[in-house]
Image (cartoon, rainbow, N blue to C red; front, top):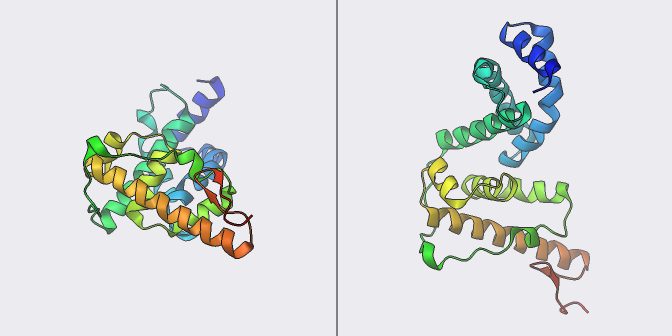
Length: 195
């Protein structure tokens, strides 16, 4: 950890508002991006982020310096997003599938040909359960067993929700492509449908 970062942390723990503002301003933009992926709109993303920073300042004294401060803050933001949805809804399986026979397509192919802004808009339209699983798996790199444990669902439900989220996004992309007259893309390969 950098010496300046440790000074910043110590000053924040001591309750010095100037340093707390500096920490917030340093990480707010990046954390807003993270929170936006879990929220349905900007207002909800801001609420998640502000709750996350409240936790950051409350628990900053527990940061051990193992790993980056940014990574630690990011994990808090993700946990806040998950906690918010667990309060609002009970995550139930849409379809229970057998884990041994589950197949999941490569997530990189689903999002290969769209901009970050377009992807964010599509992800925000997903149901809360699908949005959580999609974000945790695709953007945060969680494994299905980790998602299942975190959300209190089965591993099969995690895989099913991810698969369904991908299908919804893929369907929206196909619809957008057919409306705009672009060539349709299926799992990263151009089809000959519009040629």
